[in-house]
Image (cartoon, rainbow, N blue to C red; front, top):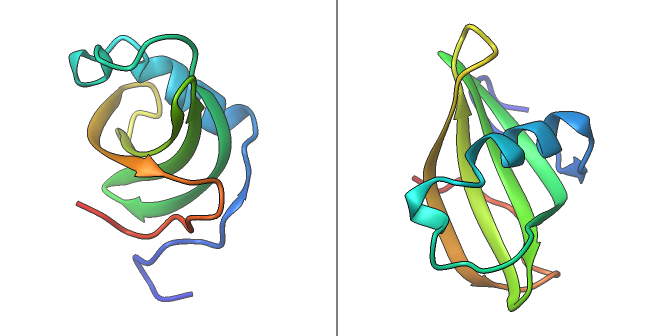
Length: 94
C-alpha cells in the first residue's frame, strides 16, 4: 500500500454502513430513490478518512466518496459515480 493510497477493498461492515447512513439524506442523493445498501468499500487516510463505498440502489450500483472528519463523527458526501456494476472495482475518484 502507498502512503495516502487506498487500502484493499473489503466487504461492507459497520463502519461503511455508518458512513453511508450519515449521508443518505444529502441533496446529492435526492434523485436516487429507495434504500442504499453498502456492498464493499475501501478507505484512504487523509486529514480524516475517505470512504469509497460501492452501494446497491434499486436501479443498479453507485460508488460514493464520503469524508469522515478527524473528530470521527462528522461525515460529508464528496462525490458520486453512477452507472456502476457489481463487477466494477472501487478506485480513487475526486
